[in-house]
Every structure is written in structure tokens, then in C-alpha cells.
Length: 291
Image 1 (cartoon, rainbow, N blue to C red):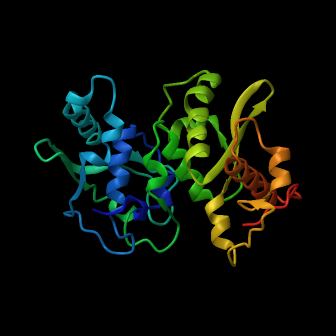
Image 2: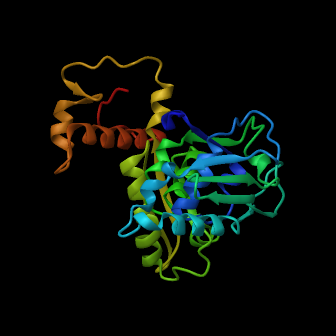
């Protein structure tokens, strides 16, 4: 069996920044199949991808759901067959178009397996990629339980910058929420906050946001984010940690800045993210950290 920690999702940025909406189960099905693709090689439309129920089973452990796995999976398969992707910001690789995610998909209950073929129009965004793509470890998103966490995570990964301002209209269009969350507080409390909380707690990205107003009306959200893994990759050599440091942060600073309930490791990760954010935005660092 393939080690999930070694599986990598690679998608062209046009697909990352397209407009679409998938449930948690649908997203896990799609991403688990994408992670099995060699993004540098050619892919034919006849190529079938298979995912076993065990790879998404934890998402189905709801009350009284153990005997209803077939119902949940059949529902997810049926919905995924009808899901559209809208390419609203095309590059040289795409046109302003829409496409189904899959051209065929089936759940085989006696084998506990799902089989699918990606749509021919989707394949150019998954294979033969040489530039303008985003990649990340599949394990970074497998634990998500909030519908929009993977969408925000992918977007932050694709932008790589420290700040991004997105209008309310852009968010609602790209997340397919045009008919939902007319109240800004509902959009924040039910979409943005839960997704960012999962990303901060479970991935290599640290992100915060603030509303942008015109008068009294919120018209956009400014997101500030950093990827801790990128910083580690850029380090020339492993830091030499002394007895005075824990995870690269001085003990005296940990004791000074740790929040109630944080372990030293948790505080160190947060402090390093804050310092990296200052570095990326051109502001002076306030704590001495090493990577």
C-alpha cells in the first residue's frame, strides 16, 4: 500500500484558481486520485483511477452511519458526476470555459472501491506540467473536516506571497456561494474562520485575515499568510540548536510570549510564523529564531 505521506497533489494554477465547489468527501476522492498522477507525464482520457473506501472512511463515521456507508458514498459519487469547474481566469493553457470534473465515475460496493476517469478537458491541468503549478503533500489536506479548508489552502499555496486581498464577490464566485451568505458575518463565521482555523492547526501554513471596508460596508478580505515549509527548504543547513532553544526559539522568549495552554512546541511554531510574516512584509523581526 502506498504511503499517504509520500503522495503529492500537483495542479495547474488555472485549476487551483478556478470556480468550483466540492463536498469534503468529493474533494478527498478527487485529490486522492490526482495524487496518483505523474504530473510530468502524458495522461490519456482512458486512464482509470481507483480509490478504496478505507481512504475516506473516517469522514463517514457519523452517528448511526456505519451501516449507511453505501448511501453516503453513492450520494458523493452521484454529485461528483455532476460537478462543474469554471475557468474564470484563464492563462495560455486554458480558455474561459467550463468542464465536468469526471467523464465517468462508479462506486463498486462489493469491492469497496470507487473508479473514475477525469474529463479530457481537465487532464491538461493535471499532467505534462512544467510551470505555473501548485504542489503539496496530500496528507496536509486529508484531515480537513471543513468544506472550504482545502480550497483556501490550495489558493495560499499557489500565490506564495505574504498578502492577498480578495473581494467578497471574488470569494463568493470562486467558491460558488453566489446564492449564499448574503450577510458578511455569516460568510466569516461559517466559511472563512472555520477554514482558516483548520489550516492553522493542521498544516504548514499560518494565516490571518482582516475585513476591508468602504465606509461601513465590508467589500473584501485581506489575508496574510506564510508557509513554514518553504522557509525550511530555503535554509542552507540544519540549525544547531543549543540548550537555550526549543525548536529554534529561545526559551526566554517562549516563556515571555507563550499563550495560555500552549506547549513550547506550539508556541515556537506560532512565533516562527509571526517572525516569517514580518520578514516577508519587510518589517523588522521582534524575536530571534533559527530554522
